Structure formats: C-alpha cells, structure tokens
Image 1 (spheres, rainbow, N blue to C red):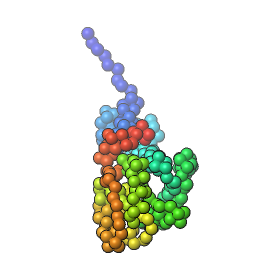
Image 2: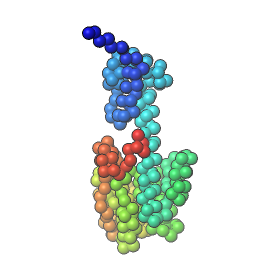
Image 3: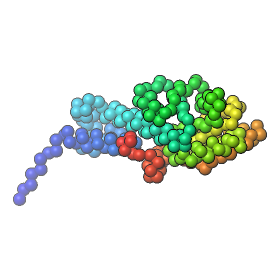
Image 4: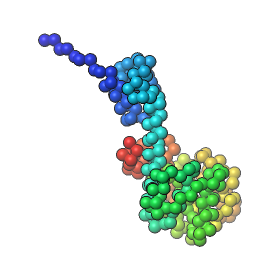
Length: 245
C-alpha cells in the first residue's frame, strides 16, 4: 500500500507562524524561529508572510506587542479604579500624555475625574496629586496601576493611618513603593530621589527620619516590572489573561 501525502499549502505554514506570534509574543522571537515553525527558509518566509498578511513578521510581532501592552495597561488601570471604588474613596486619574476617548469612558464608568500629569519627574507628579487632594480638603493617597496584588483593604488601612502618621508607604518588593500618602504634602519628601532604582524606598525612609516625620508602612507587595512578575500575577489570579490576550 502506498500512502501519498498532499503537500501542506504554504498559507497553513504561515498561519502556524502567525499563531506562534499571537501565543508567545512576550517571549524572544526572531525570524529564524518563526521560519522554522513555518518550515520555510527565513528569506522565503519573510516574503510569503508579507504577501499573505500585508506586513513583515517583525512588523506583525511589534504590532501585536503594542496592542497587548495597550490592552494590559487598560486592564491594570481598570483594576486600580476598582480598588479605589471598592475602598469607598474619591478618585482622580492622572494621565501622562493626551487623554483618549477610551480612557474617558473608563474613568467615567468608575466616577473618576481625569487630570493630565504635570511636567517633571515622578516625584513632581506625585507631589502635584497630593497637593491637589489637600486643596480639596482630603487626605491624599497616590497609587500606581502596576500593582494588581493591592487590595481595597490596603487603601482603607493607609487612609486610617494618615490620621496618626505624617507619611504612609506600601513597599514594593523591588525596593520602591506602590502607595504613598502624606498628611501634609511637602516637596522635601520627593527631592533628589533616584526614581526607578531599588533605593527609592530606603531613601524615602531616610528622608522621613531626617525630617522627624512619623512613617507607617503597609504589607510589602510585588509590582509588575519583570516578566516573572507577570507570570506570578497570572498564577495568583491578580490579573485576567483574557483581558489582553
């Protein structure tokens, strides 16, 4: 008995590579690996991929990564808005750059007011948000969107602690912090800090001590800085993979 196998159409090989990009866009992928998945030479694969899908494999990979990054940011922003709402707090969402219609709709659905972040470094922007809360007669807390492990109970605890402390911090496991509150905002707390480094928390603690301020700290939490952080967040159910798949 002779078994004759029909050759697989090139388009199916290309779809296999396209599916690989869609499924593993967070991993290091190059044209060689994608061509191998399509069983084509790299040069032939690139030509056929562009002919089939209208862009090169590299362009398609970058587009998917940008789309997923935008969807992830929207998901993280919504989770942060949910935390504030569930904590029973008023919310102002400070945006870096132009505010698009999708962000307007998201903020409106949670009753959050939108503000554009001012110029300056991270410290300048956090200070502006805290001063804004003070001007409205409120105790201000600043959180980011990159800590889905944070719970509404943390925000409520921090707000209560501001009644008896000058500063409240929630440390991040990488040496920064994911929440800060000040009873009376002061620029000195944010000056000469190496933002983005693993010395932020230590420098802020030292600044509080030098100024004689009472500082309370909440439970330390992981934030999203590295691929392993994302894997942990997915494993623990802190974020929903279907929201940015």
